[in-house]
Image (cartoon, rainbow, N blue to C red; front, side, top):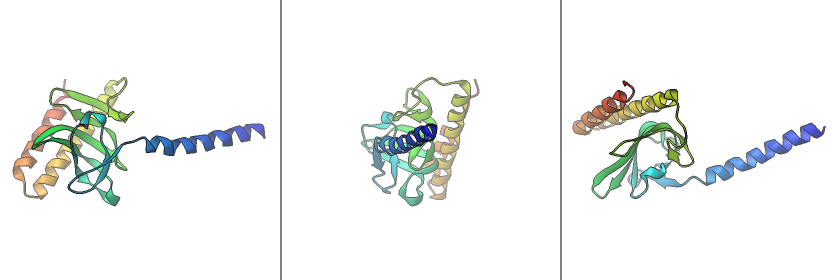
Length: 160
């Protein structure tokens, strides 16, 4: 009987801790679409825009979070979103990549093994291709070609 109470108490504490952890995430909104998401800390410093699906008002699936620095594009996250929260992918900092799963508010925190690196770049390639397809569907062929190139560049990171 005592063991059952300990298990029940543990489960109750775990359930109570989950919402607290979710509340610690800093939620943002795309200024144009109002789609909600959590941006990795490395994208802080300017407005962040989401290119991808937004069911129920939250970023979902493969896509891109892009910070704008005035009129110029800033750093970008390419990867998989689930319920508005990054799951895995790559942040392109312009001078290198942050690679891996989303943990502690950032992409690529902690140790990374070769399979995680492969999975993160694969997710980033799918995301860049999805962004390219979205621009192509809008008739913006220049941006579609640009993100096809981004997808090729990301794919080459796993070819070494």
